Every structure is written in C-alpha cells, then in structure tokens.
Image (tube, rainbow, N blue to C red):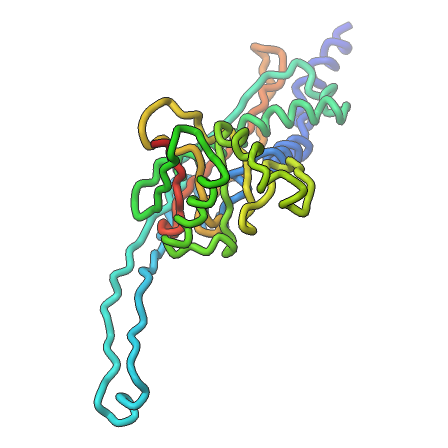
Length: 295
C-alpha cells in the first residue's frame, strides 16, 4: 500500500513529466498562423540580450540633391557644398511582458494526446499573441511624430472614392505603395471594403477573394490585412481605424520569445504551467506611417 502511494506521488512530482518543447512549438506556431501585426514587423531580436535592453535606432533625414551644370565644376567655378547631418535617434526598449498561466491536474494525459495538447497550447498562443498584437496596434495608432494622417469623409466609411484618396495621400507624402507597404484595417472598415466591387469582384481582381492569415487582397499592389487588434471607434475625433506602413520600418524585439515553464504544486495537486514573453517595439522610420482616422 505504501509503495502504491509513493509511486503515484513520484509520478506527479517528476519534473520530466512536463515537456516544454511540445508546448512551445504549439504556442509559437499558433501565433505565426493566427495573428496579423506580430507577423508584419521587422524582428530585430538578435540585437538584444536581456529584458530591459535598449536598441538605438538611427533615423537618417531625407535630403534634396543639389543640381547644377557639369561645366561649373569642370571649369573650376564651383565647389561641392556640404550640409551638416541633422539625423535623430530613436529607442526601442524591451520593457513589455505577457504571460498566461494555468494549473493542469494531469499534464501527462494532456501531452499523451496530440489533439488535446494542441488545444491547450493554442489557448496559450492566443493569449500571448493577442497581447503582442495589441501592443503593436497601440504603437501604430498612437504614434504622433512625423507621420501622415488621412481623415475619412465620414466615420467608418471606406468607399471606392475614399480608397482612391487614401492612395493619393500616399503619393502626396512621397510613399510608393508598391515599395513593401501594407494596409491594415480594423473591423469597422472591413465590411465596407468587402462591399467595394473594385476590390472583390472578379471583373476587377484576378484572384478569388480568400481570407488567409488576415490577408484579404490587395489595392494598387499593396496587401490589405484585417485585424481586430485595432480598437473600434469610441466616437472621439481622429480615432485611428486603419494604418498603412512598411513592415521593415516597425521594429519588434524579443529578449525572450514565448517560453514554457512548469512546476508541480502540492497545494493544488497539479502542474502549474505558464507561457511568458519579454518584448518591445518602436517605429524605426516614422515618415512611412499613415494613420487612417475618423473625422
């Protein structure tokens, strides 16, 4: 009898009962498959070492070339004029943490069933991924330095004419939408977009309308994504309902990507399992960011 009790206790307390690799793969794969903004950034994690680390981001100012005639130089009547650099520096600080924790009475049973394990790993991936997506959304929608704003004519009204004006605002700001830019829209604009024939009708678009990993289609060669991480309008003026940006211009750094840890709890007679990540983000090149707002 004593041996049986000891055997049960040993099985539950065995640290090897928890296999973090099984869980971590499921969590990371779910984030990669299901979340939009976390996959539309420039991952510069290789530049950081630990939580709290900072990355200095050089921001080179665009300048205008001087034009003159060739003869003015060949005849020695002119010299090259130099300007002093007025570049600035941004900072990315790894100061954010997201975690999700649960207690499982029988973790061995869960890990022995791949389908059951995937369900639990995906639940953790959803929680961590949503936190990271929301963090990036806040960065994009609240950034207030050297960006371009396009205000819609009416709240949450994205028409074909309005879409053309959005594209016009890009070129006016010196942005080529085909230079790696993406358009990310909140839920309130998606229904309007799907009602525009030029975006969805086979008479105008080559590929059939397919929703895959948030990707809806393209406008002027620019991929268009949907995300519910951009908060719905709260009725205030200038509320951001969508963004256009170049993913390589938005930095995201992890000092620790989603990691799994576990410990058996005698108090709760189960395994305490937690997924956690340390990260930070920054706008590396502000000029290329366009915020679509309600009036």
